[in-house]
Image 1 (tube, one colour):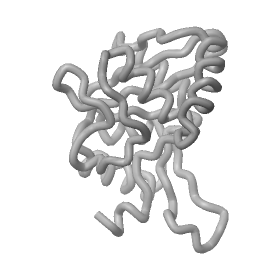
Image 2 (tube, rainbow, N blue to C red; image 1 turned 90 degrees about the horizontal axis):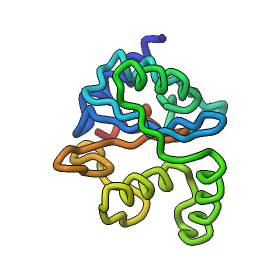
Image 3 (cartoon, one colour; image 1 turned 180 degrees about the vertical axis):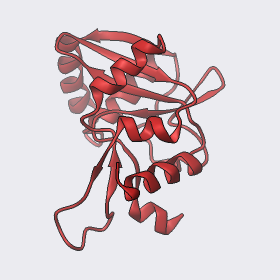
Length: 164
């Protein structure tokens, strides 16, 4: 992994309120939530890839993303015995389509993943998470803060490093 990716992973690890993550993993027939506690800088590097924008003047700069690393998350979840099946792929896709119709402001799978996990844990879900990740996790389940990541979920980007 590049120096920039390592810097962004270290930045994300240092500045987030929690090191507990739930990752969305979609397999061919099933959908899983992989619950990883105490995620390290090395774990973040393993689970992510560096997305460098094509445009010269992109506002966010390079971004460290979870997208595309579902297989790694699933294997890590199986090793740590923390992969939880949350439904079939067909039901997930149908429910996501209905979710987008019911919540027009929430169009991405990260919002739906938060919604599903909140409902599974009898928590109130108040829409897209726009809270500052330095203060709390996306959801607090049994007193534990969790960051939730679906495909495209950012760990950190250069713009955040400049602002924070």
